[in-house]
Amino acid sequence: MNKKILIILLISVTFICCVGKKTDKEIIEELIDNVKTEINNGNINILNKIIDNDYRDQYNRKKIEIINIVRNYLQTYSGLKVNVEGIKIKLKNNKADVELSVYFTASNTSILKKIMRKYTDKYRFLIELKKINKNWKVIYSEYEYSGI
Image (cartoon, rainbow, N blue to C red; front, side):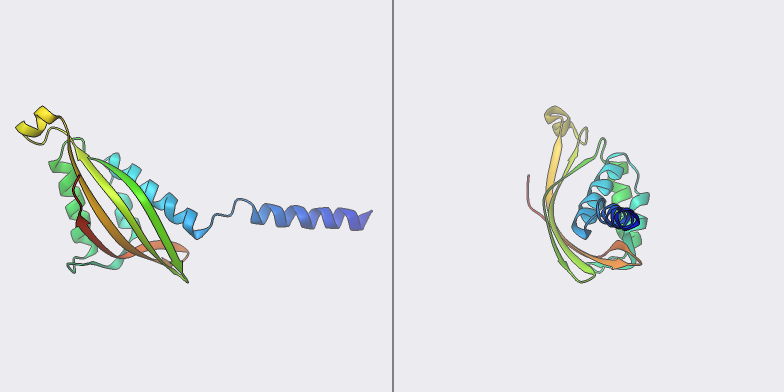
């Protein structure tokens, strides 16, 4: 009887430990969704948490410069909303390459756009993340305008 209880206990512990553990891909997808939600709520503090201090983009801009750009966009464009599509994640050791499309939509940005009621831009992002102390951090990004 004791062997059965021990086996059931071991199986239960193994099941509890393994089920619910997210994969790195799921964690990165959740991170992207959290960033989108926070930006849509006007909160840029999440950028400070997920962008590594040694971050650079294709123009050699640093972390603080990117955070200031996002802050300025939120202050300049009324009702700025972010949508993300086409997420592709390639994992390699403690790094991940992420490709995605980001749609920025704002309203009331000019008289012409007020008539149209919305202004939308689409950008293609290539982002490199690195797992640092069990957390995924953005260490590099490239982006280009790709129309509406």
